[in-house]
Length: 408
Image 1: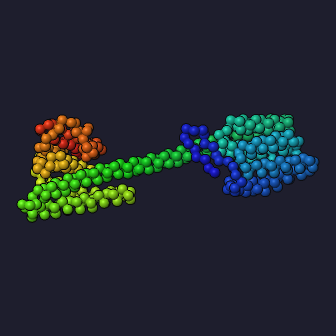
Image 2: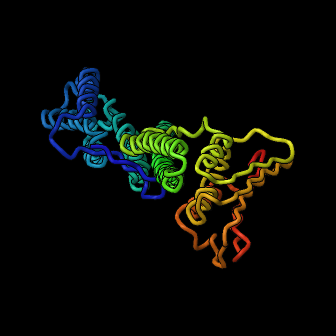
Image 3: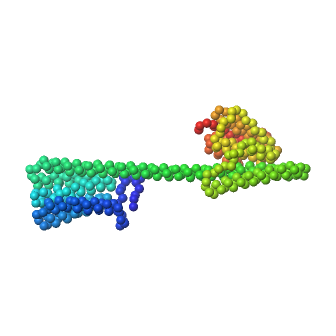
C-alpha cells in the first residue's frame, strides 16, 4: 500500500511492509542478498580456515545474518540497520582470525553502508543512524589499533575511508529522498491542477445551464407575448376581417411551433449535459422586429455610426435585450405599443436603447423588475457591459445596455 506525500506535511515516509502479501521489493532485495552471500562466502570461508570451531561458526552466522538483513533494507530499513549494527558489534568483539585479520574487515561489512543509505533514503530519520555509523567507524579504527599496535597509518586511512563511506551514504540517501519528495510534489500539483480544471468545467456547465434557464424564459416570454397579442387582435377583428384574423392566428401558430422546437432543444441540452447550441444565433434583429410587427406593435429600428463585428456573446445579448424589452412592452402595454430601438455605434462601444410609449412607473425596475429584467442585467454583468432601466410615470420606459467593444 502506497502513501501519498502532501507538501507541507511531515517529510515523505517510504512505504513499509504492512501485510503478508508478496512485495516485489522484498523479492528483488532477497535475490541481491543471496547473490552477495554466494559471492562473498568463498573469500570469507578462506579467511576462517584454521580458526576455532566456535569462532568459525559464530563468524559464519554473523556474516549470513548481515546478508540476510540486506533483503529487508527497503521494507524494514530501521530494523535491518539495527540488526546489522548489533552484528557489526559482534564482529568488532570477536578475536582475530588466523593470519591476524580482524573479522570486522571481512567483505560482508560493506553491507552496513548500504543499509545506512536505505534508512536515510526511505525514512525521515538520519541523525541517529549517521551518528551510529560514525561511532562504528571509530570502533573499527580502535579495533585496528588493538590488532596492529604500530599500524596507526593504516588505521587512520581505514577510519577516513569509513567516515567517507558513512557521509557518502548520507549524501546519496538525502539526494534520493529530496528527489522523491520533489516528484511527489509535482504529482500532487498535477493532481490539484486536474481537480481545479474539473471544478472549473463543472462551474462552467452550471453557469451555462443557468444561462439556458434564462434562455428558456426569454423564449417562452417572447413567444407567449406574440401569440397572445396575435390571438387578442384576431379575436377583435374576426367579425369584420376574417382573412386578417386567420393570418394572425397562423402567425401565432408558427411562433408557438418555433418556440416549442427551441425549448425542446434547450431542455434536451439540460437532460444530456451537452454543450448548448442556441437556435437564435442565425436570427437577426430584422426578423425579430418583423415578428413583433406581425403582432401589431409599432417597432422602429435606428442605427447610427460605423457598425463593428460583435462576438457571439455580445450579438446574442443584443438580441435578448431587444427581445425582452419589446416583449415586456407588449405584455404591459398591449399590441398598440410603439417601441423605438436605437443602436449607437462608437469606436469602442455599442449602446442599445429600447424606448416604449407606455404609461411608465416610478419603481426602480433595475432592482425590482421581473425575471426577464434580472436575467438581462445578469447577462450584461457576465460580459462586462452596463445595463440600466429608466421609467417615469407618463414618460414610458427605456432599457439601455452598453457593450464594450474590442479586447477585454
